[in-house]
Length: 404
Image 1 (tube, rainbow, N blue to C red):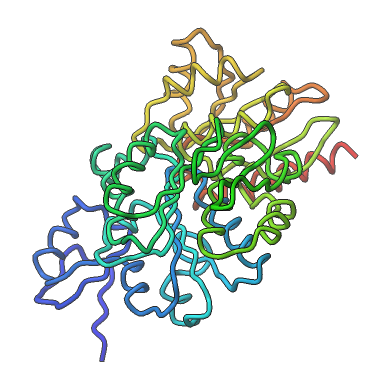
Image 2 (image 1 turned 60 degrees about the vertical axis):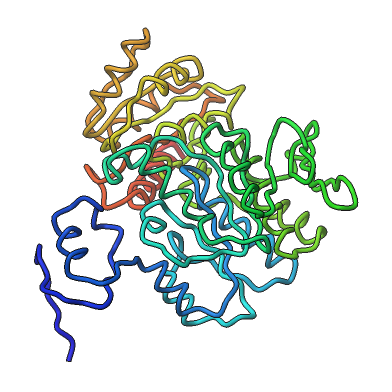
């Protein structure tokens, strides 16, 4: 009894409700037809929320969402709080919503695509990590991208909590805006421990609770590295505490959480050179964050793929000062190489990831790091960033086999 149509660019209305995939851009001809044909247009995240009895926590930001979402679930579980991931990570939100009841929290990684089609989505705890240019090709403008990101706060009330990283210039202004609406805001900063916030005191991660500062762990006790992961850990700890996790569980979770696949994932050592898979770094800011993980190492950076509407001047300047060698590849490898030459850096230009890895290996000495952190989407050569990362890992495994 269901009318199924595939490969069409138009639909005939009227419909009471349209549930639209994030794969349909907001300014596309199909979306314009859908908006005319349907009384209400929402996304799958909104549909899942409407059909759920669970409390929700939501994490958004340009970078760090997947790590923070996974870590937050780990911290909650370590504290005895039942929680599952959903949204832009793991199972679709609607599947998790159907399978869980009000005793299990749903921790959703939510993208700007998903948030753009929400109306009543209401997380008990929201997290905004950062906002830097990304997906401009989908949203049409940076202003539209920011507006959709911050919809995560739209339905929150004074009974809710918003965790906001105030070190990031894109997310920091929203702390006062959200607080002015009566929502409790927990400010995250590596620079200091702000009142009621989460921060870094020397190398110690600290939560400022109602009873005073609570020391969590030394940053070097964690298995995830880099300044950005300190920020992610502080945000996850703040969100977990706000939801009711106990401090001992948070401490244990911070110490035991493992790096996730495709996010600064160690994948092997060959002839004294370490290889890292950061394939999920699909914009320039993500790459800059990844480079902070190796302040005293020679880094051979593999960068390239398909551009999503970003410019590479800022990345070129920073990468030139931080990297021993930069190898470009993929559809926009030439564009990145041009940006590098404009700031006085001479890149190694290749066509494919396989060629980039080969040239990267040739450039590396004992103690160096070969880092796949592409700053671009993967669709020129691979199915998605996960496919790209797994292919890279297989290539490194072959190198290790050849070297042994």
